[in-house]
Length: 162
Image (tube, rainbow, N blue to C red; front, side, top):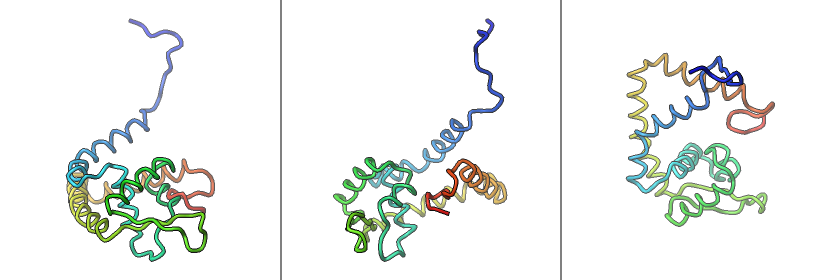
């Protein structure tokens, strides 16, 4: 059976699909641990961001959480509401600008980040043992390069102005 004349021809593999497949492959290992602790993927991304910024006494502005956790504002609002209800985060008005909200992980949220990070880090160590330290570092570097290439001018991969 021949292809119609107007059928598209692609010279390259479907990169967005491959990146999604890679994400799902990695998340298949992580999700059972998240579910065991009653967390969705989105809640984990928020907790991870807050864990990475736990040393910031001012907390993290919700716009930054949204960018770094890759969540749209309306989705983030629902996620934060559930996490606050569950005692994992606290929200407060920004003292410098009352129009803004800052978020912090609670001690219970940080304890959960610590517990889950051990499981996740052990999986990353397994990946490193399978791929090799150099190849995993190359993968990280290539992904960083793709993100930088595709980012709007003047905006870094984490969404901050350069």
